[in-house]
Image: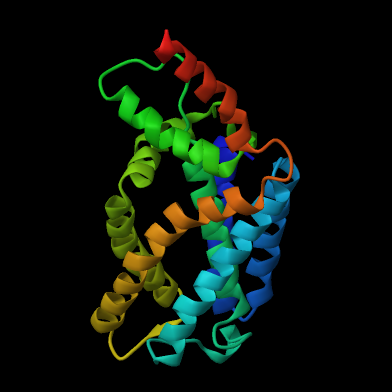
Length: 243
């Protein structure tokens, strides 16, 4: 799944989870996210690594949203409260978001023959992601959505502060949208609860962007390790420097 289809599928996952929960059908979103995840896994050359990444994101969501729910910040209506301490559809949202992060990080990889001012810096950050996510992302992405998001992806990789600020701003907006649609209630008041949610996402976003790809790199290298693949390049570079 690439480009615009990926973007639309991830948006569909979010709306299916939130609207399904608000209408008393919390499993609808879980099924949609499961199908989207299956499509990503089928196209992946590193299924074990991607599975671990999605599982780790669900754990991060369980801890983050579980703390908010136990603290009385998030209150779920009876028709949406399937699971404890957070409903299963909320964990599906974290898996869906991890798929979005995976796609976003993928578009930051370098293209051959990149020119222009600042290209070496962007390539360095992109190489980190390409190495972390594995050889499946070695070919450049095509399509309008990745090209538009590429500068944002590189900024997330090179500057965790950017990812943290994006999480602090975007996380509360997502929860506010869910509250407006009737899937969750924010207590004791929206300003206070959104401030707490923003603090949680200030920490969660850099974790998802910077740590999870490294977890995937460690777990998902049964064949054709990306670190091994870069060894000949490093050797050639060292040989050229010696000359």
